[in-house]
Length: 348
Image (cartoon, rainbow, N blue to C red; front, side):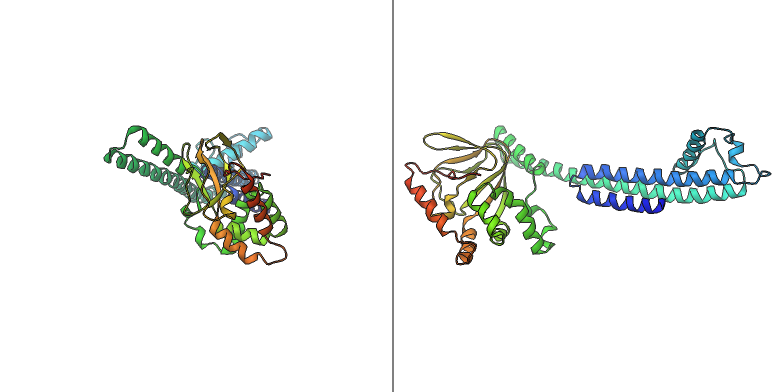
């Protein structure tokens, strides 16, 4: 029963490890698993070692009698056995030694097992540390090459510092899909499900898309999978400028961080879940009416307008989805404004 519990514990630890996303936390969990394995095996071997020592015939001297533990307390007897079994992973101990042939035979078997187990444990730890070192070394080399490139091209120290900080933020911040090598080999249906979970949270902050998620999720799944992407910006990065007619028009939803939207009349702080530049979805050749700049390290969910319009056109005649009514209301509202802007008229 205890062995079955150990097997079950191993399955639970593997499930926990699969859900861990941090490399450092994963390394700490691997150490925890190895520690649990060593203690569990030491407990079992210690109990067997004590059993052999106490079941010897009275005429045969055992390690229990030789070490004078036969009259000791229960906790001292258990800790002595546990200490002996743990010491086998590092070469054994002199305080307790086998006295009978059976004890010596068991000690040899345990030493061989402990030697192989110790070799495997050390190799696993070394492999994990090497992997973390390689990841850190790669980032250090990339930053060193960037500094060398900036120096060779006589870039001013202020601009070079900003670029280095931006690069460090990009290396330590959330990863984008194009950096994940294994992502393309995952089935498209699973990637579509992943994108829906990623971007539907951001889209729910808009009343129209919240309705779409509730009534026609199959359409929103296509929006999320084919038309949406994640953009990372460092503090002071410009997302778009006033008067710009973007070649790749996108609507933005702030997922993390803060930004600043500046028009000719005022400056508006932009926080999480705010929708910006929605007009590109419902108008032709929209020009941004202000400048959007990141005031902190930010992550934006971007919806490509052209792809959105192509997908919406394929579903506009279905019974559950028709964006034309909302589009007409939005354009009418936009035309009624004395000073049109890029900020959306509804936020959830």
